[in-house]
Image (cartoon, rainbow, N blue to C red; front, side, top):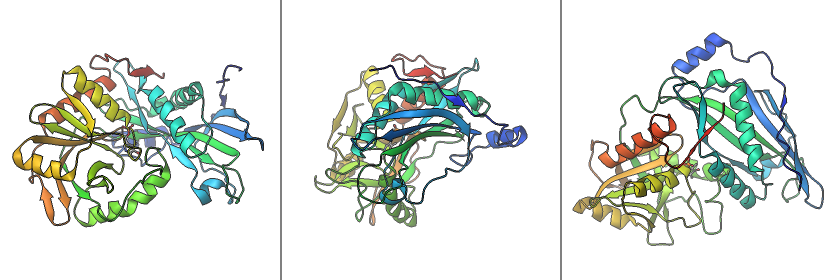
Length: 368
Ligand SMILES: *Cc1c(COP(=O)(O)O)cnc(C)c1O
């Protein structure tokens, strides 16, 4: 097989966002509000036998997508995505974290959603190309980053039900606010007893927009009960804890051990989750991936065996969980401070990503 062609045509324009406006945005980026000047694109076309290829790799000005109203993504939800960040180091170089893991996960999601797999070199090159074109958008302030959102959509105009033969892979980028500064406050979590985000044999292990669509109503329910996030349970397995709508969950035990729910097919395998498992083991902690039920959570908090609970994912890195609200019942106490182990793992992860701490596993890849 021929080596993958990773040449990207450059259709760069004058910058979409004037420099002064960009600087104002970078002064207070928030999350997901603003987008950079460009987008990286690679298209895929297959013939009726299903054989196809990726072509027309390019960098274009950021802007609306011209999509046929019959495009598959608009009707049958054939869409997957990734979430990662670019970090500027002190010497001005720009890096990302474990992109090989994101590339591999994108392809696992692609297989599940009957989308074509993207060669890993093309995935990485699309990040490099976009970040090179938009490097002015990578924040310099410590703790800030440029959030990268690769995604793949079915673009073929066809209403029959089968996998699309025309597909587009794109990357957009959005500056993300400071996770070093500001107080890290534990958040309250709502247990959804009404809704599930994933089911047996479903798409829960894939990073697919449809999973988010199905979790939004539960998120509204959580907010109506004064909680920030939803915890989903495995109703078939003794109310085992699964994950939040977009973050994995960890428990810290009094003896120092860490527990996270085992991957069951309905849990998304977070790259932050894998990294926390590794960092925990590096510290000599006993880390297990196993079933953990709400009863164990309740009893463990009551007895003091469970000392900290946290959620993790690329966007918010590590967020301490304060209380769990299950109907009228509360697990945990109000105004408990963020746990020590939680905050220590959090600062190690942030430090590695920022290039300030040793990266013992070679997780960083230079983009620019
Ligand atoms: C993206 C995601 C996560 C976190 O994954 P990371 O790779 O750590 O960002 C967790 N759960 C769900 C459902 C997700 O979509």
